[in-house]
Image 1 (cartoon, rainbow, N blue to C red):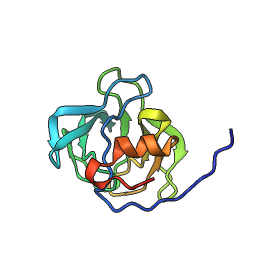
Image 2: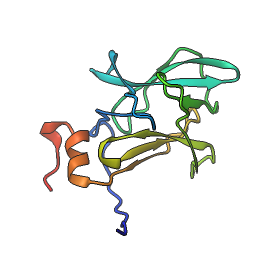
Image 3: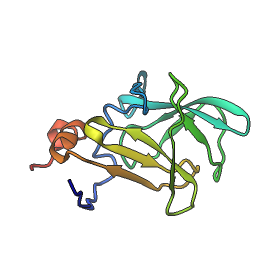
Image 4: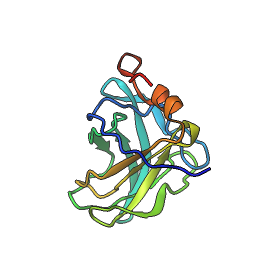
Amino acid sequence: MSMEQIIVRVPSGKVRVKEGKCPNGCSLMNTDKLMSGKPAVTLLLRLKGQSGLIHLNPYYGVFEYESDIPLEKGDVVDMFCPHCGTSLMTEQECQMCHAPMFVIHLPKGGEVRVCPRVGCQNHQLTIVDLEAQFAELYEDERRPMM
């Protein structure tokens, strides 16, 4: 089946990752760490020989995070699953700064790709099953009609 690309612009904070996973299927959602009142996306990061957890705001386009280790603008971190240790890094380069992107897998084959350079806000949301993915990502009261 051939796939077509549709570009949809969504205001920051309107779409939320409710079920993010690593390539092995481990949940990356942390119900013990809330950001904007919802479970954070929690990843293991490595930078310059240090490892720690980073908690990402689950709302798409909201770049708030909390990290166990200090991060400076321009740092490029490596991201891993905090449960099984699998790398989340991809071969795809950021179109803005050329750092390798990392991926969070979504239900129904969707994914979020994010640049791991601190301060770069390049990210991409890929949706395979549009109706099912919107049902997962959008808050019920904000879901667009299909």
